[in-house]
Amino acid sequence: MHKEVITIKKILFGITSLTLGGAERVLVDISNKLSEKYDITIFSIYDNGELKKDLSKKVKFKSLYNCRYDELTKIQKMWIPIKILLFSKIIYNKKIKQDYDTEIAFLEGPITRLFSTRNKNTHKIVWIHNDIEKVFGNDFKSKIKKYIDKNIYKKYNDLVFVSKDNMDKFQNVYNNLNVENMHVIYNYIDKDLVIKKSNVNINIELDQNVTNFLTV
Image (cartoon, rainbow, N blue to C red; front, side):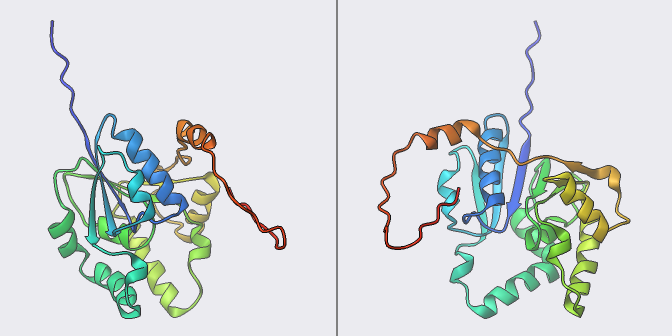
């Protein structure tokens, strides 16, 4: 009887930070689930996000900067994205490049530009959450950014969108990219976690003299 050989795939996710947000929540839940079968690492540009504490102990975590984005000065907030754009290859080779089977840039912006650095041994995926039509304006700066990102997206093997509408709007902006490499994958929801949290008792005192808003 032959023993089954199991190859553990190494997957690297990249994101700006793990502060409170929709894409960030989805990434944490996906990583925790996948870590049951795969070797998962998250690379974040900034550290100390609120959702970092929700990561499974099986998920490895790295960051480019050991601070939160909101702790930066105005100059740092302007310079870091430019630095990543201009020196992405140097940063990638020094801080990221390893023997990962798949690298997934999980959010638009600096992390997508950083992960686009070519690596012949790695399958590259970019995950697009936002409505690209609303990201750009019509000024000169926006046109340059759109041109740069169009060439960035061409470097990825696959483009994943969270909805069909999201993918269609992307194609309206970048209408000559390879559509065969575009896929729709809806956001993963950990139903067990939702049910678990629904059973937690939370005592909140509301001020009856003001209007109260509840968001879920």
